[in-house]
Image 1 (cartoon, one colour):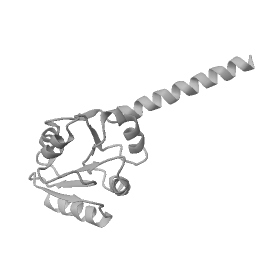
Image 2 (cartoon, rainbow, N blue to C red; image 1 turned 45 degrees about the vertical axis):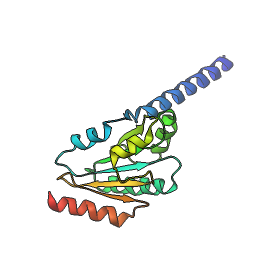
Image 3 (tube, helix red, strand yellow; image 1 turned 60 degrees about the vertical axis):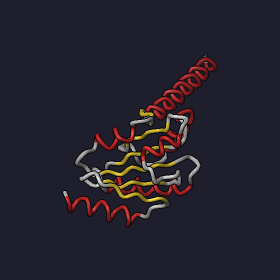
Length: 166
């Protein structure tokens, strides 16, 4: 009887692990393909938002995630879109990484076209793939782009400026 109870606990634990892995992968529900960037921008017409492009191989990207997490806690209405430039085959690893940060409200995408240059060009003709890459959109749809590591004060200035213009 004890042996079967242990087996049931192991099976139940394994099932819970599988279901949590599935829910992690489900956090990234959108595949970034041709037209996705325009979809992201159009859906937010008239509203300020941030787009952050990142990768599992980018150390500074994780520093930015920490900053975005802190700011998301402080500013609950922060509209953040995260786009992983990794592949859709890495979706579980991407989702697992995102789970480490308090970014549950952020919309997440992952590159899903093998022709990544076309996707980068669609985002910005002046962007050559350096990461992290962040776009700050104002309510009029104008974007300012920054490559490299962000700092907290820099993002907070943008948020405060956006609130003044609302």
